[in-house]
Length: 320
Ligand SMILES: Cc1cn([C@H]2C[C@H](O)[C@@H](COP(=O)(O)OP(=O)(O)O[C@H]3O[C@H](CO)[C@@H](O)[C@H](O)[C@H]3O)O2)c(=O)[nH]c1=O
Image (cartoon, rainbow, N blue to C red):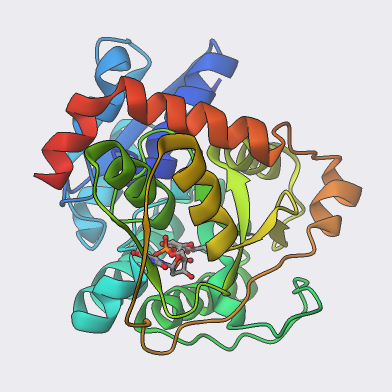
């Protein structure tokens, strides 16, 4: 039976991951450590709050003593760090919190995991650590890191700390770098849910610049299955890209949503330092661990649109 400490799992990807774990493994124990910032929402986990396998603790990942206590109390074998400030635009207007949570927070978790001898440490990172691509080519795990924003720089720095602890102290670590996730429970500050919910509300769909920027879209459940496989089978110290090879321009995304929900696109000022294109080569994960995504983009998008149509109360509270 595995005992997990999962940080930030009242957020988007973390809450999907807890649902995935509890659905897949009957005999596991899961502790969710979450600060409940604006991005954390216990409503995401309402259906499992009474599950005896699940325990919620409100707290900050920068609180090393708290993390050490939790590791001891719950006999944690695996620590998965989802907790992060994740929105690029917020990192441009207020960068310090990104360093504090994403970089300092990862440091505290690493130190706690080292002292308490946690078996496995998994850092959830991002394709944004590679920076921007031109119109062709793909990032592999060996591509140089070249982050563009305070957000991606804070995540790249955190990765370096993880690798340093692995080399120096022999900790068993993995890093996953996924492309843009989409699906249920994503905060409507992010492109896809913003466009969907704006269209439902009859508001314009805001697109930065000329809308030619490209993102590589991954249905969140596919990211969860990849992370689970990395925990179970990942080679110690390995980094894995996670992508389903769904590159789309922002214009293509906006057109699809505008057509499906009768919305109107509005072009607005570009994001400073806006990365042009992200595209990942996920061949290592596929070859070494046999991982494959389940969802085609059209299916994932329709499921996502349907979820937001069905969950108006959930997102209206966040937007309000
Ligand atoms: C919010 C917003 C975004 N955009 C554009 C900017 C990007 O080219 C694209 C996606 O923007 P966002 O949804 O903010 O996501 P992006 O900056 O790519 O970053 C996301 O994806 C990353 C992985 O690539 C994660 O590490 C980040 O945490 C996550 O926020 O849409 C717009 O055109 N209009 C908007 O209103």
